[in-house]
Amino acid sequence: MKLVIISGRSGSGKSTALNMLEDLGFYCIDNLPAGLLPALAKQALDADSNSENSNEKIAVSIDARNIPTELSRFPQLVKEIPAEVDTNIIYLDANNNTLIKRFSETRRKHPISNEHMSLKEAIETESLLLEGIAAMADLSIDSSTMTLHELRQLISDRVGGKSSSEMSLMFQSFGFKRNIPIDSDIVFDVRCLPNPYWKVELRAFTGLDQPVIDFLNSHDDVQAMIADITQYLENWLPRFRDAKRSYTTVSIGCTGGQHRSVFIAEALHRHFSNADNIVQVRHREFKN
Image (cartoon, rainbow, N blue to C red; front, side, top):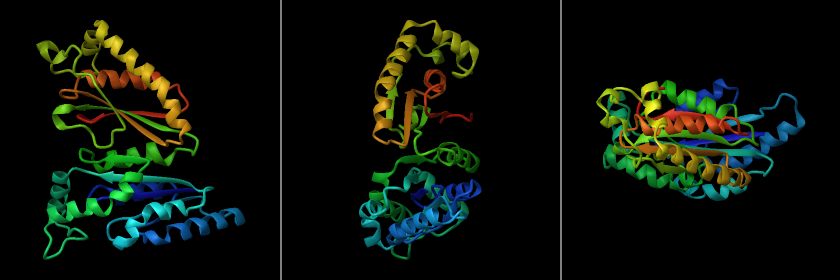
């Protein structure tokens, strides 16, 4: 039986993620009281072993509307879930400015805001309430720059079709000028490499375009960087998998996230797509 626990701050996309999993055949429960997690898992596991019509895939959403004492017990509650249940914790988040903007645009009230607590204070308080869940997440997703369609696709690709024995591996390019993605597990800085941006004729292209590809392929330093990163990942990704790591996000950063990081993320994606993993690539600073 597979159990996916969705959590995160309000406005980060929890409902979108849960709806996507429902479309993928999961039995979904929104805003489950955290204290019911072990009982739900045990009941579903018993039903799974005794009935041909049981729900083999369950997804639940747990958020800050829970009783604070129950949220603080979350690590212990997860330990009480039977070991036979394939449990994955997915935590969604976005930066504070994005969350404030989303609430302002929809004119929705934040679940824990009141006459004594502003929206900004509620968002910051929510981080404290959910920090125990965030610390245990198998996969953290930063939805700050994502559309609803992109988030649904990401959940479908990384969570929906993954078996318990597979590791979902994401290569993500980004620009340091917009900060490191909060969902990164491993970060490589490639700003030391030759920059196509300073070639006026290449500036308008990206690392997906042949002129930039030809430029970067012509530099030995670029090839050496790819070889070194590849060797590091080949050495250590099997250890991640052996440690039952379900999701790994490798972020590659350059200054603007348009040229070098994109090129190298694509090269790594091609190399590791033949491995025994679910492998995807995403370029944060522009639409794929």
